[in-house]
Length: 293
Ligand code: NCD
Image 1 (tube, rainbow, N blue to C red):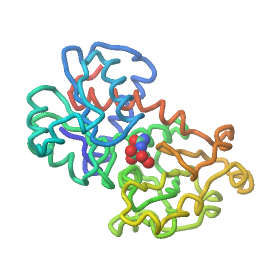
Image 2: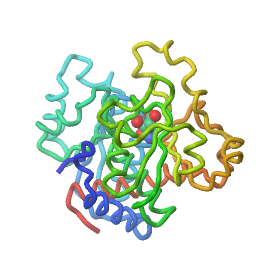
Image 3: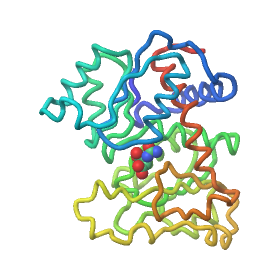
């Protein structure tokens, strides 16, 4: 079993991951469920939260971890294909967590590695473990997912977290609207899942505002979106003016789109969201390696 994208996140799987994550959050600060297993983290792109929360999760379950966070140190720099790197790692470890700038890269590796593969971000594609973290945080705050309303805000064209979250919200019976930066709306295959609105409309009607960073590293023409962050900026004054009483999430890192003065507002839930990453990734590792607590 792999965790690559929305196809691996039907309602039953989401429920299983979130229940297991809650178990780890409540009871399991450490266990030896994965003792003797080896997890590899292969990161061809920058990461702080995803890689380190996966590594913390593996250590908390008693697994060993190997990996790299700088692709320049690997044989990819000598021209090795991603598939060959995947085959080799498949012979060394029991599960591979990978992040890579090309869409579809994790699926390509999953087809040849012979071990479970977790997509920790494939370019502007998908990021399914972030979606589980997002859903976990929404459920933690509201008690359920069905019927919740979520506004996804920011760079919706390249944002892989949103591309994975929207189909998952549909699976669990939640609704969505979108507030894109100008020129950075949802890809056509996702646009029907979240009709466009404006930020004040979203603040007036949604339980969750999900802010995202402008993915400048994916732009071919950076100048075309020079002011993107400021177009849909969330700050404390705006939340107060709207009387917003839901929660603000953000996968982080943030830039100008989410002001620091939101941090002390009761709606701010993004640091809690990041903390939830460890319990959720403990659930992902143990479920994919079929080792329940
Ligand atoms: C996100 C990502 O890598 O897609 N970060 C994360 O994993 N929390 C969001 C982003 O980089 O903007």
